Amino acid sequence: MAVSSNALKKWEKVREFALGLPGAVEEFPWDESVAKVNKKVFVFLGVSDGSYPLGVTVKFGDESAHAHALTSPGAEPAGYGLGRAGWVRIPLQEPGAPAVELLCDWVEESYRVIAPKRFIAELDAR
Image: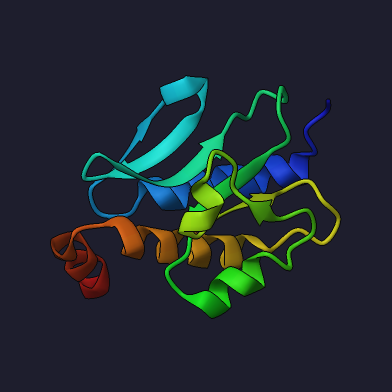
């Protein structure tokens, strides 16, 4: 499965944004990239090697943002029961996939749901 260069560029920008948030670190459980803060995942970045469709999985605390994310082409509640907890997987290769700016907003929303208050305060001070 070929990864479109546009989708890969989006993925790289979203990953860079996520890892630039206060206290964020990248880890590779299950052989896929995740961004964590305070030992908790706030975005699942998956793999970029083309072995699985490129996408990001984020958590929403806000109902309207959650509903909006689910309107993205191919978006679905995350598997393994995470969907019930507000996690949504957003594919990046679908025609009409969200723009980088919106994806980064959603990553920040997910970060704010998971991160400790001190890191959120640091982010707000930027």
